[in-house]
Every structure is written in C-alpha cells, then in structure tokens.
Image (cartoon, rainbow, N blue to C red; front, side, top):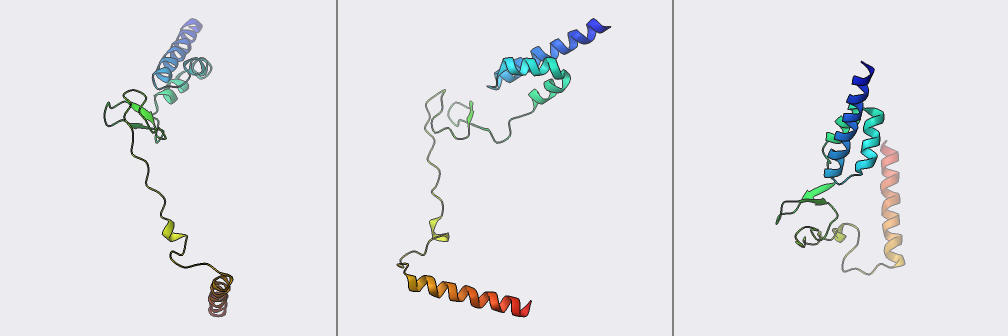
Length: 118
C-alpha cells in the first residue's frame, strides 16, 4: 500500500514537471514540487497562465505579454499607444509661478468651502 502512494506521488511529480516544461516553466523545479506536494502540484501546474502570455496573430504561438517581436516567426507587434499626456499637463500654456499661485488659491478656496459645508 505504501508503494502505491509513493508511485502516485512520483507520477504526479513527473506529470507536473512535463506540464510545466511545456508551459515554459522550470520542469525540474516543478518535478520536485510534484514529489513534495503530490496531486496538489499537479493541479497547480494545470492552471492557466492568466495575463502572462499572448498569442502571436501570425503563428498563434504563446509568447510573453511584453514581447515586441515573436520569437517563433519574427512578427513585430505594433508599439503600445503613448499615455494620454493631456490629463496631466496644461497644453499650450507656460507654467509660471503666478499660474501655480492661482491654482493654489483655487484649491484653498475649494477646500474652505468643502470644510465649511461639511
């Protein structure tokens, strides 16, 4: 009976290592985890990688999300759009100390109104 459990844990280690290796993870590390944790490591190795990979539109292989070029077919992904700078910067206006003082006064007035009404 003990040999049966040892065989199952060893089998789980082998399967977890093979699955992890196919997903690009460390097969040896997952083999050791499979031996230590048995069916639990096998179940965790089967979990999908959420948000870590994307499919190449040309060859349909899984690659890392941050990849710029597909390592299988050489497809170049378009660069991500730049962040919307108009939310953070006043466009077309030179920022001077007067502008900062004016914005600070408006902030203080709004703060006083809030605490006065609150």
